[in-house]
Length: 83
Picture 1 (tube, rainbow, N blue to C red):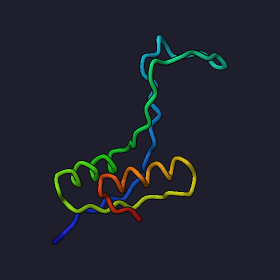
Picture 2: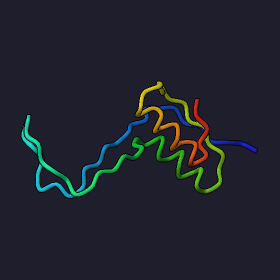
Picture 3: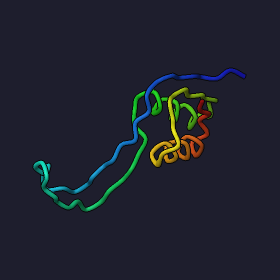
Picture 4: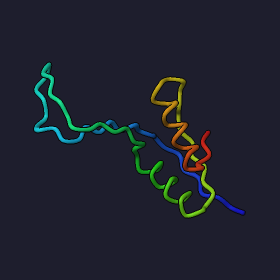
């Protein structure tokens, strides 16, 4: 069976939810919630295709840092092979 492959940059998006406004430089404000998600057009496409049952592979640069570990876990959770 064939597969779909994508090459590109993967982002880890940090989402602050429920902030009254954007803080000024050096200022702290609070948010109601916080979420971390994968971002980027090609990763999103690979994940959505995998959700449809289409085998996918994604080629990107991942390291051994906290954000790369998160990205690897998410790709594995959605059954997207990565290189």
